[in-house]
Image 1 (cartoon, rainbow, N blue to C red):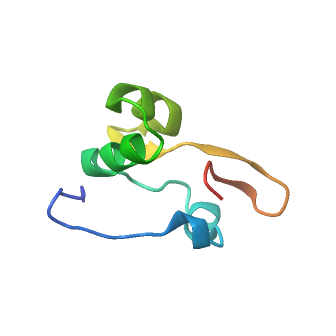
Image 2: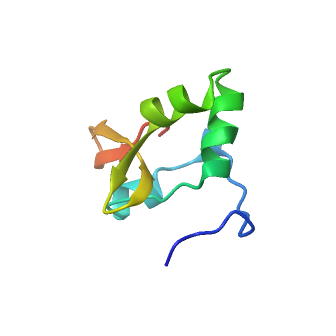
Length: 77
């Protein structure tokens, strides 16, 4: 099931213990999420999309990185 733009969730990645991205294989992001990332990092939307997300079976998901504790976690943990 795809997440729509009206299904709003608010997260503070600064306080994230990396539970979602280390337990689940993917964390889906919406166009609204990408716009928020772009604004936060002072980037244009296409750059934020390339830098922070990837595509998996038609879903836009957060990129992951190697993590010494969890194996893999999102770029923000």
